[in-house]
Length: 232
View 1 (cartoon, helix red, strand yellow):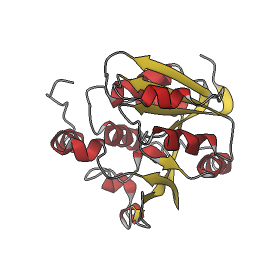
View 2 (spheres, one colour):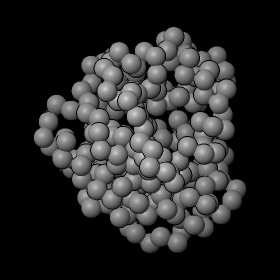
View 3 (cartoon, helix red, strand yellow):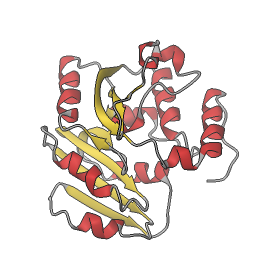
View 4 (spheres, helix red, strand yellow):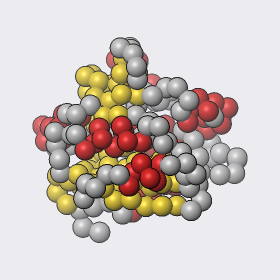
């Protein structure tokens, strides 16, 4: 599939997010940079997520429905296969993007042609707390061996770089972002983390908090360079 120059393909997978999905989508539609497509996979939802999404009529929204829940990792790779943008951006269904997020990130790519991906800091939803607070000041290529110094939802990456990395590793049902970032840095990818918060991150009742034990197991596998033994 031929990539469209300067276009962003936003990947959003949703599973039973009826209470947050509209706010999340609206934050993308409100972007000051408007050359994008929003690819949404409704991943086997059993609530009114589908209905909430159907209330939007913007032609940039492309919706897919999975009868069965395939999980975030496989869902994101599936959406990538249907993307046409030069860049891929992430958005979680319970988070929101600041309205000039894409504009900031695209400008970074234009300023430095060698960049493979751009992330940013975030503000925790319903608070003034910035994350990472200090960890973003550490050398990322060192820190990646001990924790994930990036916020997944803020990611914008060149699609060609994403493909070179090998997409999301489908052995990782959780911590797929940590694995992706570690693979990216080990392959020598160039990056920039914008210190300005461009994302509103939900930390309550999200995937990480609901599946703490699984998240820790898969994160430990990333740190130890091990293939997970748990079945997806």
